[in-house]
Length: 111
Length: 119
Image 1 (cartoon, each protein chain N blue to C red):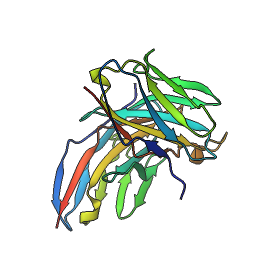
Image 2 (image 1 turned 120 degrees about the vertical axis):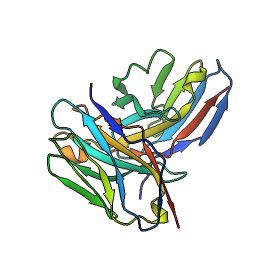
Image 3 (image 1 turned 60 degrees about the vertical axis):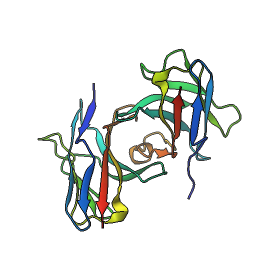
Image 4 (image 1 turned 30 degrees about the horizontal axis):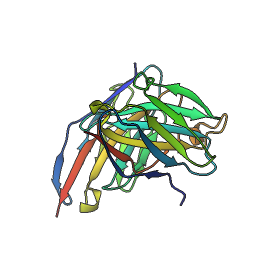
């Protein structure tokens, strides 16, 4: 069945460092891909999405490119802030509009 | 901005007890979901619900689980006889879902979750 694998956390960075959180997927067909973020005490929020190969999703300085060849959707940001500290979830949506998530990666950004 | 609300934020119960987790979806949404995350594991789909019926459920959603939309605004998840392994964060979500509109149908709005601890 469809699945998503993302890197283990926590990832600890200093402010203004570069971030990459790896995500790979296994799916039949070409699902839409998502990154969700969960800030402390809040729900899952959509951060960005991409719906087809080579699409780049972007939001709040974060980017991820839908790579069909490598079945990947890595999350990147050039300069992280303390306020980016959160748990990040990679996900795909299957044909019945059901999200399949990875296990989440906690990001801690220190001043 | 409208949001999905879940209550309570934390629930502690004894093994074998019944629990009801409550959710208020966004008012004009038509599809409702429950997901859960056991600590350190993936967020897992439990069930989707549309037009007062379950539209899809996972293997996890066995006879101990049930969902209901009792009054047109609340959407509840009941666990009839809780087990230790039911301890998890439970997320409710809702979606507008409009036939033929992929971009709309891919929008899920999540609540902040209920942390269930079974002792």
